[in-house]
Image (cartoon, rainbow, N blue to C red):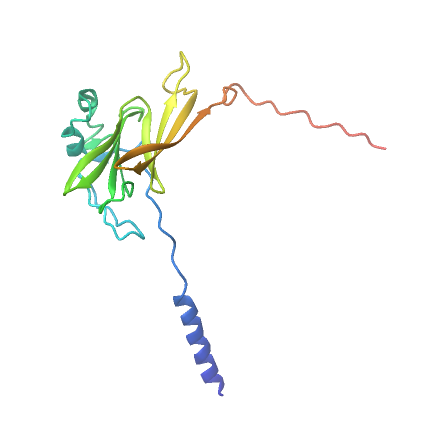
Length: 209
């Protein structure tokens, strides 16, 4: 066989190997950064990879303001931080096993991005229904591999909002038409971290023979 023919066969083999390489697996979209603010007009959201489900953009402000499960206190404080920018983080993901991705909304304060309330909406008959709500200071939710993870900072007596003493992390899973608690973790933060200056230890002394 000629050298030219061998080179052609090698090229075909490399092409076949390259085409057989698989892609990355499916991933859940996490929540946006707590210090961000979404505009009232939602932007386009890419389809969820590996599920075949498309996340249709929602009007977060309309959902919250028309929701009777959102307290009047949260609605009264839900004001734009800037021009057409509200302190609401929006996440799309598969939590309840519905035909469409679920929507998680986190409402925060403008100045220090402290959580005020977190809500989960499920699409039913082309309408979104509130299936989870938690309203308390520093609460924030995220989607993690199909579970709802709710984090809340806790404070010792006398601590400011900028100095939490720990956090509680609760994981919920959709079961029997509602979210059921699966795991609960409490983390206590060390008081030693960040206090004073670190003092470098003295180098060990050596004795020469």
